[in-house]
Length: 345
Ligand SMILES: Nc1ncnc2c1ncn2[C@@H]1O[C@H](COP(=O)(O)OP(=O)(O)OP(=O)(O)O)[C@@H](O)[C@H]1O
Ligand SMILES: [Mg+2]
Picture 1 (cartoon, rainbow, N blue to C red):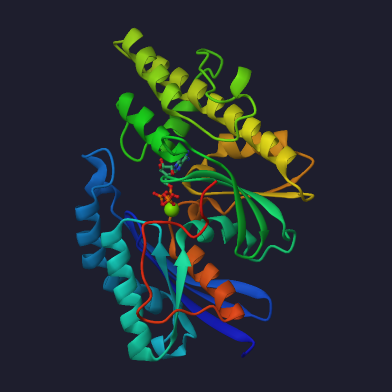
Picture 2: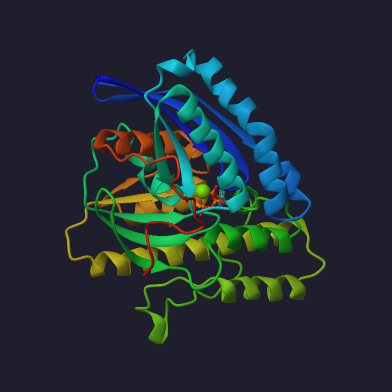
């Protein structure tokens, strides 16, 4: 293998059409270019992602995004070493578009094709150019579709310790935001409003964290969501102060739940853990990030850079590079799937 490797990563699992080019030179990985075409405006009026609209939008945008990534990166398609694309889990329409595009390019350019698990890509993103971390580590994945705590024993050796029994954390943020009359995606808007609110104003439930359920490894957010709904009904008409106080109290409760579940998971690990990797869209939340860093100050916590928390092509290219180095390639008849390779609890 040459000392320099260039990987194209393509992401199309949900509502972002994204691509990136990364270059590894000796042991440093450089992001040459990365482009994200977000469909958020198209889905905003529905309060969530409409799969059929998403698939059409990926189809309209993918060649524009990939062309731009080559222009911005100053790289000719013939100069890349491999093409990686998210193959699972995700909305099938988007996966078909991204995979067909990546495979066609791989055939035309005679380059290796690498299938990437989108969740694995979120989890491994903070490892890029970070020599502080080594296996095993604990991963907290808090995204739009998933909420999991995973013991990462080694590369591609995962044990799921916790998962959500109902909504994911990102979905919970989005639904609470919708109830408060905030736009989609609601996570960043809840964070912004919370900055001006009193986090002690409303006491909220912490499902599966107290009493007989204290040691339950899993998450559940539906009771908390219902609590917020009833709180909103009780306080109508809402004013800005009430909205900010609800956001702050909700965000604080979520943080306490995450701390409780991470503490439980650490006790359960049969290996010594020094690092916790926190990734997925909700990990962009600075209040959550700083609270977790303060609480687990004896450990090394790693987060992706803020713009690489939500879906992007860099994480796919980086996971592709790790697989490239191990020779984990796929044939062009490989399947896409709505399920993750990480498995279940
Ligand atoms: N600052 C923030 N605070 C809280 N939540 C946030 C913040 N920024 C983004 N989010 C949430 O992150 C979610 C999107 O994350 P991401 O792009 O990782 O999810 P996804 O790709 O839809 O899901 P998955 O990766 O599980 O398939 C949204 O629900 C959004 O509200
Ligand atoms: Mg994602």
